[in-house]
Length: 257
Ligand code: BTN
Picture 1 (cartoon, helix red, strand yellow):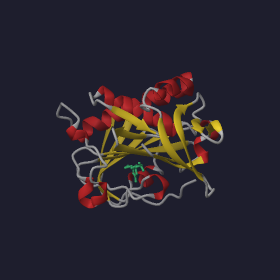
Picture 2 (cartoon, protein in one colour):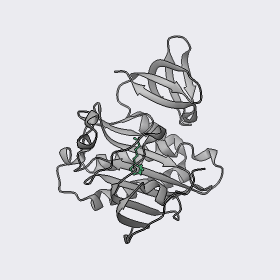
Picture 3 (spheres, rainbow, N blue to C red):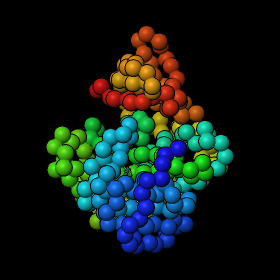
Picture 4 (cartoon, protein in one colour):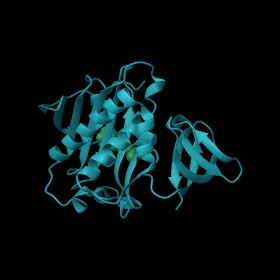
């Protein structure tokens, strides 16, 4: 369980939309850490994050003009059953962006939203309590992440360059939250298999990847072939043939092509 580390120290504006209570702050360290102590169906957005966090402990550049959003969803029942939530959230957000008219999107396992080799959005799903999860998403929209981190030059995509209409960060927030709620309902009502099918259409061509296993100093390469109906990663390696890996077994997956 993650520690509860941050609380609001400033005024936020708050509004309700489609069952979500959305709190908007000017500057936070990380919207995920704030959201960790809030009730289900609350979302937190910040203009900037001073200590934005990415997967595997990386720093996430969160400059003005990007969408930095964390949404609290209920996770009733056994904890293990929710291990597929990061995949389901990736599906929710990619379909939301497709509905806005963004073309040529694909997912990079487990839930990076990509345009070709450029990263448009990343997700960080964390559990701070037994009965809820925080789904954090960072989307490059009008911001310039490469100005803060020059090594990101050529590695990121921005929604502003991909969208035809004039959307505000509020508009995009609402579309993303709507889709997350719908994906949550699909998980509860129909189970993950339906979502797995949908996800498998969105990985793009099979790719050569380099995988690091959790807690082991072991790295190997293989061909990524999507996921099975339980969310397990399907990898073909020259030595072991076709293998299934639970998401928790994989620390890092890097595309090699
Ligand atoms: C990644 O691709 O490594 C995940 C990036 C997740 C960034 C978002 S921005 C909103 C939320 N708050 C954080 O500190 N991180 C997530």
